[in-house]
Amino acid sequence: MELDIAQLMALLRRRFVWLASLVVVAVLGAGLLGFYVLDPEYESTATLIVKKPPASDVSVYDDLMAGGQLLKTFEEIIRSRRVAKGVLDDLDLSLTQEQLLKKVEVDGEDKSLIASITVTDKDPEQAVRIANGFATSAIRESNQIMGHEYVFLLDSAELAAVPKPVSPRPFFLMAVAFVLALLIGVGGAVLWEKTDKTMKTEEQLAESLGVPVLGTIPLLRKDDRGYGSDSALGGVAHEN
Image 1 (cartoon, rainbow, N blue to C red):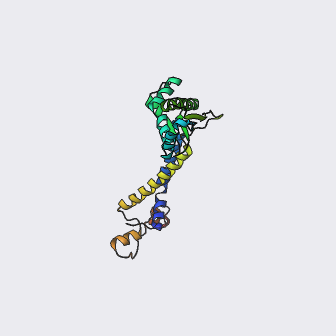
Image 2: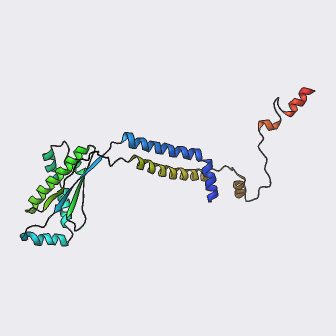
Image 3: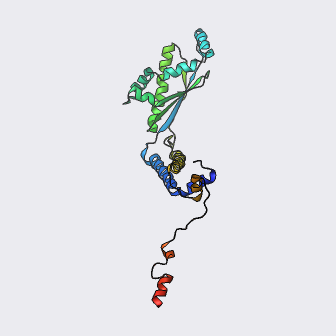
């Protein structure tokens, strides 16, 4: 059975209570999850810059720049376990190298000379310490590997006066829950209607049988049947 716009709107009106309940529960659940269940996380970013090396190594530098591999090379160094071990040793963190590396994102554009190290942590002060720790370890290890001072600190990570979490975003979660619940609710209502074989309207009956409806028999309420002491028949019998 295909539904046109009018039939769909009529269907949604019939299922409004069910649909509205689904949406409200989903939005409230997402709000509770975002505001009270999920722990907030904070970001902090340190920025490195790659400078041109001494004249003796310019050819290597130019080859890397021409191939767009210079920053990519340093990004891989920053993400390496060698740099992570240096951060753990410098900051004395009770984390494994894998746990530490999961907190870090390195971002840079091709043929750019700037790389950003962004750290996410539940503690804003810890995020700043780790970001700066990665910057220090990356500079030390990169320059040691390359044999010259190629990488320098451009901006260190700093703690904001009022740290603001980057996640979770409760209102975003609630908006997503609203849209998903609405889509699921409408889809469920349509599926419900398509699998329901009962005839609820004259149009459904005529369409199913392929013949027009000539007449209908109204459903009588109890008061319309003449029963009870207040009915006209009862009143006449009382007078006789």
